[in-house]
Length: 343
Image (cartoon, rainbow, N blue to C red; front, side, top):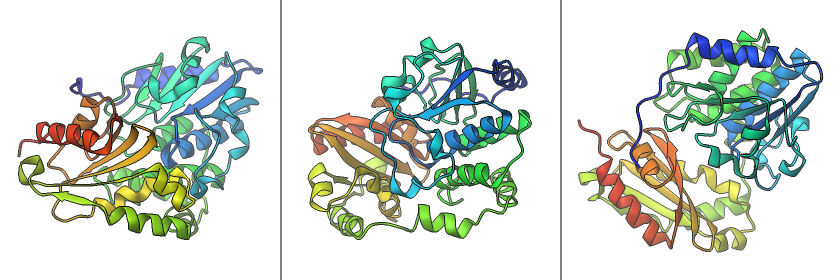
């Protein structure tokens, strides 16, 4: 599948419709916030930050959730607003409003996807260029560095001022999706938002240590093993190069680690000087892999991911692959060559 037409930023009519959907809620309304399966910093931080803002507006019957087991990555297990979280099986079956965060397609909502039909209204906040347009109301800005950028603007339009708890959630979301302000999407507006968040008194050093610089020793050993099997293919992408590695369920069990520790592994692979594209395959089933892709710019990895059933951005994308690792890598290799960006 090739990417569709480029999405435009939300219009004033889109923003007005989203504000109206929140403001017309009755006093006893049930609001369900949902983010994608295996939530990362942007998904969880945007959802919880927005939820805390809705609480400030007086929304009392408020839940936040995500599909799958109700387990959080340890680096995110301290965020403000965790009291809003409920397991997916306890989520409102027919909320008055469902708000989805950081999900490019309805499939990313897992067993919660039916809420799009049973809810009185469905609002989608996202920044993926591959967003499929699900839901009724859309605030999808592919130019935004993170979904938290969209969430913060909606809160501002709702008249919610930032406090330290909201800012902490949104800052975690912003820093994780910009790679601590290292990725291409880091614009002047991103730094301006970061400044507004920091002005609430949050401590960026403490947040960074918790989110980026704390890892179990078992994970350190696991990373060493997985990086030791990395393979460089200098001929891929018309000579721009592809570097890849994989981690199995046995690897996780042997080092007594949970899957979340592998999320940052791609950053240790993508620094390879001889490769434009980096790829990490993370086994999630007997023949199923969660695949992370990164590019330095010669290859649009969102095209690779979309061709293989996933999505993302030009520089960062992912999909779910099936087969053994070599079979999945073979399909990636074909699509990488097809996704070269004309220079």
